[in-house]
Image 1 (cartoon, rainbow, N blue to C red):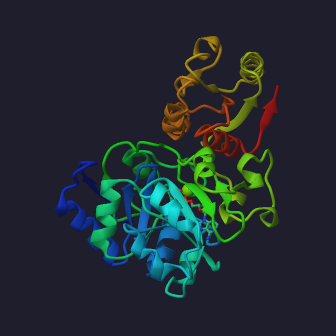
Image 2 (image 1 turned 60 degrees about the horizontal axis):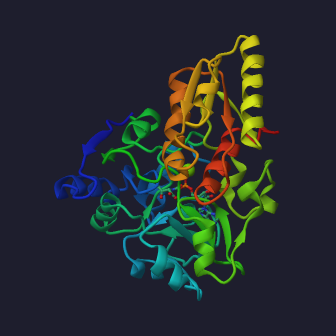
Image 3 (image 1 turned 60 degrees about the vertical axis):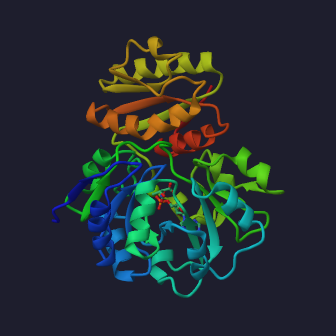
Length: 353
Ligand code: TXA
Ligand code: MG
């Protein structure tokens, strides 16, 4: 059991002394959680195989699911990759620093454990002063998956990180809640046309404006668990984002959704279970029968919905709900990431109305 140090920092002007202390852990092979614009990441020196192994252990993450490698400058990408394909330049220019992760063919300086034995590597430059300062001060690329125990909702605050990893990591840089709230978009540049493997903070629509051709991988909007052969991202085969309660998503036209959610609440209540409803401001008043009703905000503000999603999934745990009935949301813009996370949190228990 470690004594996890909590270092409070200003999100815009982080105290150099605290960054120096946090970077000291990374340089010595330790583990530090830090904020990015998407979610909190758990960082380790990406070029130190033992440190990355410890990272997998702390998260209880399966070894075949590689983390994203974070750098602070485009010039730091070159040594990690075999080549920068044409088209990548414009993406890096347009979207970095920001919530877009690019998959390249990897170079030999990267330890095999960091990429889970794959020939490719996931890289991004985060848009957060604390993350950038930590990476610079550490003097190495920083491997950082989301700072949650494997399978749990990603952390959008230092409190969420400590709920999962207190005593398992060296330190957490606490700069308050993250802005976006869902993870980065993962785009595979090793295939032609490039393929979006995970929807996230950069929308498909925004990528389409910059790329001549880009594809949505089948599992972005999958309604069932796909086999690894069908997908190219190792992470997708695992249970994800799940609160302790069972989750069911109801999708369809809003009025029909509300009626179905009410019906399911009645059924589950009848079974003697504590029922939560995850809904929106427009529908919140409809669910008086449920034990816990949490709203993601207005349907007209999908960025706000994304921002609140993981925090509310964790909130149901605190309220000890046995089952959560969630309303589906529009799969447009950042809503695509929200729909994808909800379906996964539900283990693909989707009711269509
Ligand atoms: O916003 C984010 O992306 C956050 C912050 C901390 O940067 N990080 C994050 O990392 O979400 P993680 O490890 O939880 O998710 C990384 C995803 C996984 O689905 C993994 O399978 C995929 O990226 N991935 C990593 N390397 C890959 C590769 N070489 N090919 C395909 N997918 C890869
Ligand atoms: Mg994750």
